[in-house]
Length: 495
Image 1 (spheres, rainbow, N blue to C red):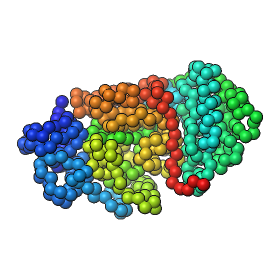
Image 2: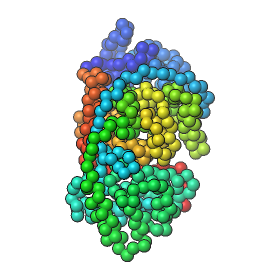
Image 3: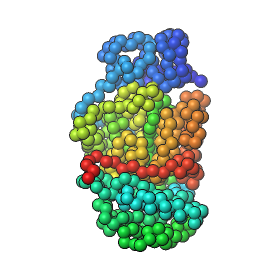
Image 4: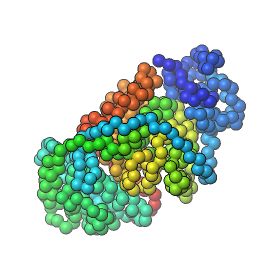
């Protein structure tokens, strides 16, 4: 196994692939150096003497500047470097074209064709509350239906409780309605019971209209204040929905129908070396098949946003991407918060020191494909190919937003580990092998082998095969553990 990695020929730091003890002798580009402090796995060390104010270069880009002199072989972290980012920026469109890495292989998966032409990779019965007041009733109905049916012939029976639907104003109220609408209409659900109270702001009748055109054979409504026994009435509706969903079967569909969300969390120094580039390779592969990938976490694009902007196919798409970035910066400013208060303590412990470093690793999940569309929060996918989506970096909020946009699956890379799951299958990809070995009930796929004994091309082929198996019905750990949650973005006043 290699001891370190210099990612780009212009870099003045390298990443420790294994823990390096103080005094270790290394040769980098023909130059001998001595490690002057213990360097943990995933952390950086200086390849030459750096002076205060010098740019720290990683991935071929500046990730900040030195705030003290750093000797060759010393640890480089948040204590001796600082971000170069501040305030709003002016952007210039400088389009970059890249050659496709993949050809269309005419591949398929077995999915569920819905009446409106959408395709799901799961066939589940869902209960979606219009308001948090009926969360308990939703959970009771799920347990009753599971007990009665044994959950046979469907992939799952799930309720999605949340805190909202009432006492909200303006954008918060609309955000709640949009995300709940998108969940109700999601193709991974074979049947949905929309469970309302009756006096909430998110009125069931108005919400029904908000859905637009929908399959009335598969989406039912129950307003609990209008019935004597909501459990009895709910079970009548659910029995009928369950009967219809349980008759659905998988059929062969083109891989172009697959829509995948790209997300990272608990990142470490390996994220931009193993797992995120692997997702980038898969994104380019799926786009070449005519499919769709969606990148979100806008605050974690800051510092690398020009890479995405210059991959836009037109000035109009460039302008939409600039709007996406600056809107989120404005959100921070309006709330009197620093725009660049990132990375997290866990990121720093894993070897990430500045937002630029985190963003340059984060955006690698999008590969090199052209940006085809930009979606605002709560919008649904309209264009195949690579999409950018407005959402914060928060894991559960962002993963929920990806599912709501229409992604049937979320790919989630992590170097620190996390067990959570969103309302669609949430596949965890480890950036390093120790995490994969230590958390087998959390992690589904190990990208750490890429710095050990596997090429990126081989890992990509193994990853493609695994994702198709999941699309065909193989459950990921979040499904096996029944970790299924939603979180809705809130920005304003609660009454």
